[in-house]
Image 1 (tube, rainbow over the protein chains, first blue to last red):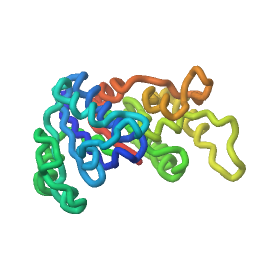
Image 2 (image 1 turned 90 degrees about the vertical axis):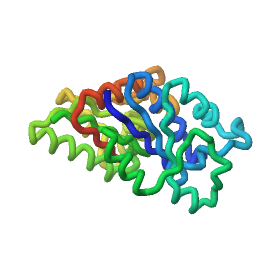
Image 3 (image 1 turned 180 degrees about the vertical axis):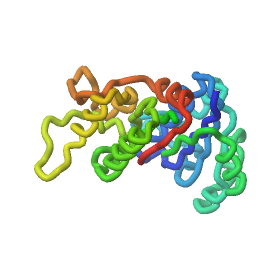
Image 4 (image 1 turned 90 degrees about the horizontal axis):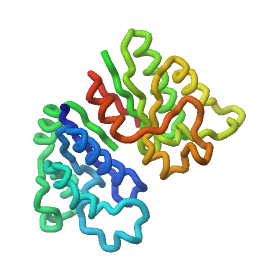
Amino acid sequence: MKSVLIRMSKSPLNGLISGEQLETAMVAATFEQEVSILFIGDGVFNLLPAKKPKEVPGYNIEKMLLALPTFDVNDLFICERSLEQRQIGASNLPKNAKVITFEEQRRLIKTTDVVLSA
Amino acid sequence: MKYTISVKASPQDSEATKTVIDLIYELLERKHLIERVFFQHDGALQALSNGETAIGQEDLLSLWKSLADLDIELAVCISSAAKRGVSQKSNSLADGFELVGLGQLISAIEASDRYIEVF
C-alpha cells in the first residue's frame, strides 16, 4: 500500500482534467491505497457549489465530491493562499475539507509516497 | 530501480514528448526497469494514429513504436482515450499502444520505486 496525494490545480471548467483526477482518486482508493486530495490554485473552484452543473459537459464534480467518503477518501485539503487570492470565504466550502498553509502542504507532500498532479 | 512514467502531455507539445522519450532511453541505458508508461488526460492523444505526419514534423508515433518494440508497455487510460476520440473500434489506436483501466496506473505505481510525471 502506498500513500497517494492527488493534487488538483485545474478549474472544473478547464476540460475533463478535474473529473479524471477525482476518478483516479476513487480507483486508487478501490485498489486500497491511502488517498488524500489537495485543492490548490484554480483547483479550489472545484469545491464551490456548481450553479448549473448540467450545462458543463463531462463530469459532475459536485456529485463526485459527495461520493468520495463512500470510497474511503476522507482527507481533503485546501491551500489557504489560493483561497485568499481568489477571495473565497470558508463558509462556501465543504465542511469536511481542511484549509492548510504552505508549511503544512510541504509536510503533507513530504510524508506522501506519490503525488499525482495536474 | 523500477520506474512508472506517466505522460500527461499531448503530442502537440512535442518538446515534452521528446523529453520523456529521451528520459526513458536514459533510464534503460542505466539499467533501470520501466514498469509501465501510462498515458492519462491529454497524454492519451499520444496514442491517436493520425495516418501521416506533416512535412518537417517529427514522427512521434514511430518514436513510441520503437519503445514498444523494446517491450516497454505503453498503456493508455481507456477512460481518457474514449473522451478524446481514441479507441480500438474506430481504428484510431496507434501501433504499440494498448488501452487499459486506471487500475493499471495504480498497480504500476505500487510495484515501482519511483513515479515520474511529464506534462
